[in-house]
Length: 150
Image (cartoon, rainbow, N blue to C red; front, side, top):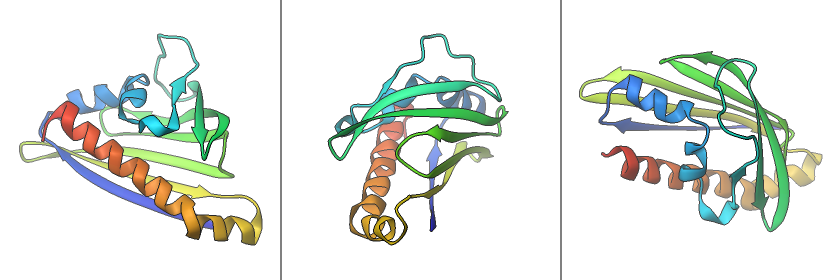
């Protein structure tokens, strides 16, 4: 079974500046909740473009995971898409979109994800995975607001 998470955030900065912040892969460490102990393993600098591979390490529910993503699409300053090649989900595709808005930028996240383990995965999603993913994006948006201003 697949799930979708959508979030949006108004950022009072020009789109080019907001896109540049997200195109720096190392800013992902800054906006990820500390409880995940998220760390990028790919050495700097990371040239963001379609096809770029990025390796991470994180802890999810106390279990250490390696996560590898590929930038599937990269269209500055409009959007980029990263997709999990290896990690804790059966599928994870994250589209980051940036639109000009009066006084700043409207950033949208759309994540399509799936868990393995059939009915057990659906139960895990209902009991704690859905809330964890939502919590990560709530933290992320709050932190982005602090860094880039509201």
